[in-house]
Amino acid sequence: MPLALGGYVAFERRRRSVASRFASTQMQPNVVERPARRRRHVPTACYAVALAALGVASARPYAEAVERLPSTTVVLAIDTSDSMRATDEAPTRLRAAQDAAAVFLRTVPPDVRVGIVGFSDRVKIVIPPTVDRQAALQAMQSMRTRSGTAIGAGVAAALRQVAGAGGTGVIVLLSDGANNAGVVDPVRAAREAGAAGVPVSTVAIGASQRPAGGFSVPARAANVELLGKIALLSGGSAYSVRSAGELQDVYRRLGGTVTVRRYLVEITWMFVLVGVALAALGGALARIWLRRIP
Image 1 (cartoon, helix red, strand yellow):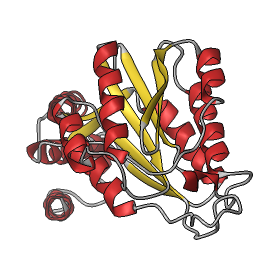
Image 2 (tube, one colour):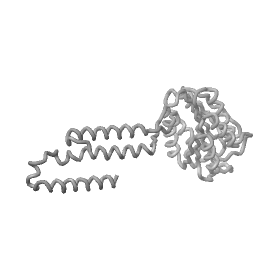
Image 3 (cartoon, helix red, strand yellow):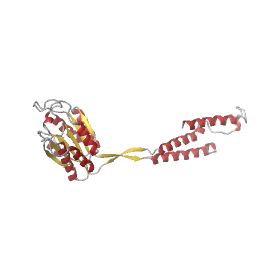
């Protein structure tokens, strides 16, 4: 483009120089009929932009598109191990998780089925996937903590709930610890979820070592590496939060995005269309205004 612009400027200067050989500067307006100075450059500008558009088209550009997933089921898998009684998130980590899940239920579209699974050393189906938000909120209040953290079993149980509901599905898993119970390997469960087309988005909560509700059991920090691997293998996203406010922000964001699919679509045709249209416009204006096609 800079070379083309420089060439055009040089051409204009040469054109004026050649014209001056046939008449004086004062006589040229009476001898040569020419369009307005600014109008004369419009066709060339059209050609320049057309060339730029076709140059972009040659790179085969892509743009992100968003598609709403039909018949979506979301299962919230929530850690209910004893460490979730830690008070670093007021009043407790479990209550912070329940409040964030309530935000999610208010944010997600009303036609999306939402189920809740709790996991400690065993898995509990708090409520199967349903569109009844009030029932989900009430069932969530029944969650109680136990010893152990069976992350793999939690993912596997959530995956079964998605499969039973039919349609597309997403799992949102929250944990504040490491996998130390159950016989299901979390990595294998994540691979199975990915193979089934069910992404698992993980949320790691807690970064302190405060006692769990005054007991001697330490509230260990979440295994961020494991949760990140689960998200990566299944096609989900990984989040790490350090406060109840951040946790609610993440769940609010997930409520608006987990039911959509983002993908890339090629938009080469748009730039080709613009380039061809501008080239044709430039030619038409040159023919009308300049009585020539440069």
